[in-house]
Length: 127
Figure 1 (cartoon, rainbow, N blue to C red):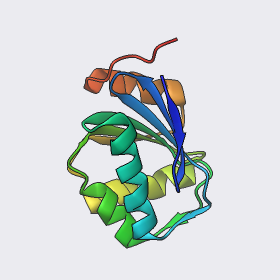
Figure 2 (cartoon, rainbow, N blue to C red):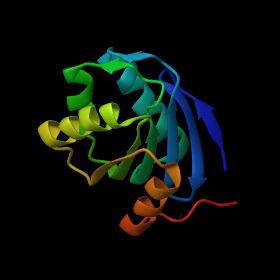
Figure 3 (cartoon, rainbow, N blue to C red):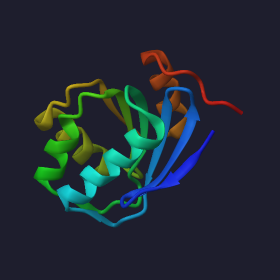
């Protein structure tokens, strides 16, 4: 399995169709940067994956970035990892208002997030 670094963070292939994205930026406010991030993922891993999005280090984002990400057609499902209840509440508001075109769920526990992605059709991570 391979790992790359994009403008947003570290992208790691966990299985044939499961990708972990760990944000290393504190703010995701530039749509062009996010577009480059998505393009690099597609270039290296292809399309139609399940995503584990580790946003625990991310402090803020913009409406434009959230809308861009919510409209990605090549995403099968995404589990968003957050660090606490307050962040989970805000992330759930994002999901409610943005209405992503793919199944989306917020988690504080990575194991539960991966289990949910597998229940959505992702292949379990390779050991």
